[in-house]
Image (tube, rainbow, N blue to C red; front, side, top):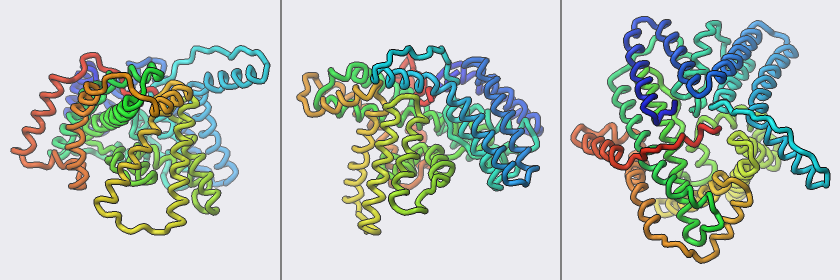
Length: 469
């Protein structure tokens, strides 16, 4: 049951009706949301719901034991058990085939003919997201930053809350659990913001991302047919597509949550306006990048042991972040690419020292340079194999034999509304600048978005890209 389905709209209308009917009965409201979240998840595959329940039970129990245990060795063992259980489940379902196939390929390269073990393992939707979410809970309890929760159903709702269950944001228990545990009031401002976010999210997904997908998909399916400027158009189109697809999902999730009385964390903050690699990861998929920083980069040593160790930790964190996205070598290469960008930027900054204000002209050039690097990185993310990425990069220096005017105009046509809104958001430093306009300014924009949804929304919509992770 994807967000971009009529089934979801009917499901959410029913949940919203029940949520409002139970607004004076907080405990029953939570139980209804928990049942709805499991029903939502079971529509993908009912077996996945039992796996989610298993993960929930493991970390609820371990956190409770951590709260009663004061022996350091025992506490470390409990934390290790949580990490091993969660990463073991994630590794089996997501990476078993990747590692067995890679090992078989290596042995064949060395002259040993083996057949990889073939198991038809179905990847549970959203498993990467909720695994990181539950790990942050047990780690925070272990660190003493969070008290273990005694109410199992509240913790189960924290891990399964349907707006963000299958593609984030990766919520921290310290921010979402308190909202679950206390009565919630849905204000008029929350309703206005929620409706706008849902509309804007659907516009980004159905109008921009899905139409651009139809333009760029043929190029990535046959990379040897794309040459010269067509490669640039392909990479630009996908850069806009993946941003609108993923941030569109997040906007819908945040809007749905607002209408239910919850506030989910901001996951995107105009990432293509970033001035450098560090700035980009402070703006793109913020819930993941902050998770990697707090639970991987800093425990590895962060920047506490000199420059070389810092570069190593940056690259290792990003490589593992790339692998988190998918069990394929091109995701590893994408993570390595961004790790190298971060390391080079940090090294340059340490040599140069604090840089002066670049001004509007300098900032524009920095944005353009960072966007170009990001766009090249998306090549590694989107291709099917590393060989396809090499083919596309070679195609950049070859003359194009395809007519470029129509795809260029199509990409510009669907990108222009996004660009106008995002420039306004950037200049005003307010992501809800449209929603805050007076009625006479907001009404025509809302009508425009609604009209474009009716006219240009793809009838055969694709699933959100990040559902596969």
